Length: 441
Image 1 (cartoon, rainbow, N blue to C red):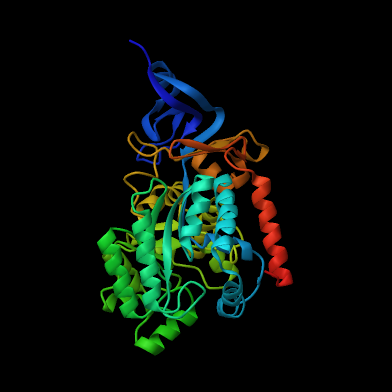
Image 2: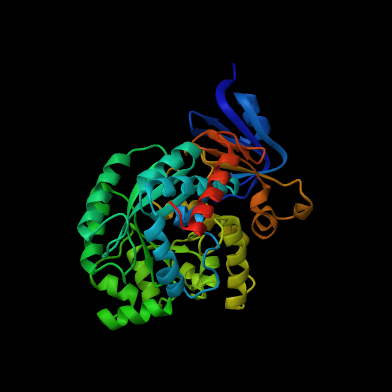
């Protein structure tokens, strides 16, 4: 009996499926028409399938694509603009004025391309965005070949994209209708935060999420200032405030959650809210350290986000999971807290689940979409190997990502984009920086 045709066989010394079993030693993944058709030992798959191309091999780790569950991709053009400042000063005195001056479809498209290139080269195949001019973001995404959940930003005050709340919602619904069903882009609705959106605004956003069966993406309980401000205005802390209005459910992806009370952790768990843990941004802005171990113990789905590059200052999920796995050990005074495998699970399957895409993404299983990363283990800092999960979390770098596949399409190979000119994207970023510094359009 002849072998079955497939597009790719991807081989690894280690294949990390991120299912209940451990890594496959000498494993492989067969891919056809954008989907994983089989996972198993390399010898078995090569005996059953005839590939157009073979990727990977010895000294390679094959794993699901990483998921960035909270970012503002186009803010990459503000990277390093206003560092070493408190969040409110950074945001209100620097970032918001810069956005008012520079935000446009051209800015967002060019910046998104740079962000997508950075993420793909760091093994991120799916990201969850909250920003403006998301149609322009979609153009960059389609060009680079990454996968994204794009959140149309909602605020209760005017910006360059809308004059009032009603206009934000009108634009958001138009955007959602345009992109529903796209193979790479999932639209979402993104009310900014409890201090910028009223309960009525949240209520309408959740209704849209329900109507179109899409995620609802928001900032929540990020800083002490936010907690005190929401208490002053509404008489409750942020999570209890939203919950008192029935505004928390399993569609909600809440970024940060740095300052929840014990009761609020219970509320997040009871409502099925997912949390995007943005540790490095929270550290840099001195916002605090989210009680992630307590959240995990409560059964909350916690995944990793980078936040925007203006406050991190990169979009590197590998760095996030490494920092988190180590820092939470120190904070909890427990070296067994947030194990390497747990961290990698948060960066892959838990991230996909948080975005409502866990049935299609996040693990290497037959029938799932082929979003796959190959990590080169043949490096001095990755030798010798005793535990592959520990190596990928504590030792590996984004620069070790050799190849990336999204939707069954190879987009990074040999550490370089094979579908776009990296130099052109970086050149545009430098041009925009010159314009911003000089103040000329």
